[in-house]
Length: 441
Ligand code: TRP
Image 1: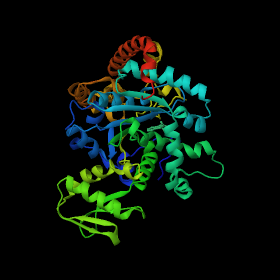
Image 2 (image 1 turned 180 degrees about the horizontal axis):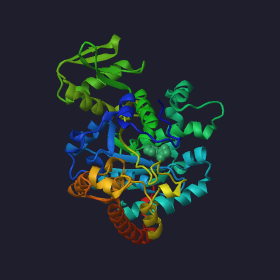
Image 3 (image 1 turned 90 degrees about the vertical axis):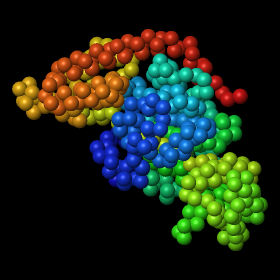
Image 4 (image 1 turned 180 degrees about the vertical axis):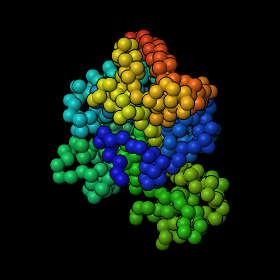
């Protein structure tokens, strides 16, 4: 199995995907410590993560953390695209700094749009909707890949520790892949890591909320961040916690620097072995590893390192299209676009595939199948906020008490009032766009 970020395939078995790629399960233990957890977190739509513990820890200790995600401007914004921004707005409400990359270079390299077209799509289709959905301009920055020199510089410089075999194995590139496409994963790594540069708030945990198709980029970014670290804090096979020096120069300086950082964090039983480029910390426990790692990371720029902490990520499932296939801009009947007219949206909902039985009698007798119903998915992902109300729909459907016609009407009404409200807010968004696009000072 391979995850291809540029294909249009859908995924069926998310648990298998998760296990095969070593993504961790995202469970109640991960979200129940957050305030008013978002419905996408509560309902298993976000089904996996890498390194979410760092985010939770930062949140709980009131330490700084940030969100970085990206949008690919290619076509109109639909409900599938809305999920990430819903998550972002939630994280903004609980204190994260927000960065959003407009992947115009990627769209140009992989989809054939011009930079002017992508700019136009990004602003009119995405950014206006983001504002209408409730993204706030404070501590929030939206930027274009093509005009962010720091991102592009990192793409060139961080690429030093990735080779062509790794790129072909991860992405299936071959001799016919154009070079802008080839470099786009490095630009995305630049997106993900640049927010830890001093100018953008410095070294801190960063969460990248994405669809699971983006996991190859997440793995690449985490590998690259790790590869450029000067210190590696880990537990050895014989159960000792140690700090290991990675470069071959300045070893003594790096060791004595680490010793003083460790001492200032209260560790006293240090055993340094220069030949091994190691410091064993006999009074550290597993719980200290992250703390030590971060304490050292933030000092790495003193030695001309980046000190990037491996970025964390959450992965969401994809909403199914109304037709039962993938929700996709290229199949308008599968998707509800945020700019759809009420009439179009209603029509698509009334034609949607449901989990109903072949006849009313049979459905009353045997019940419906909400797990296979596109209308139920609309409720679950977008339209019903109250968990009790959602559960009630689920159970009534299964019990044969709720018929598809009724649910479709209910969904259409909810959708229409959502779209009406959004259009109203979107019309006011225009004047505020520049507040989101400013450069850091
Ligand atoms: N590749 C992403 C997509 O296809 C867009 C993107 C660019 C992105 N840079 C990013 C996503 C950084 C997350 C983080 O949608």
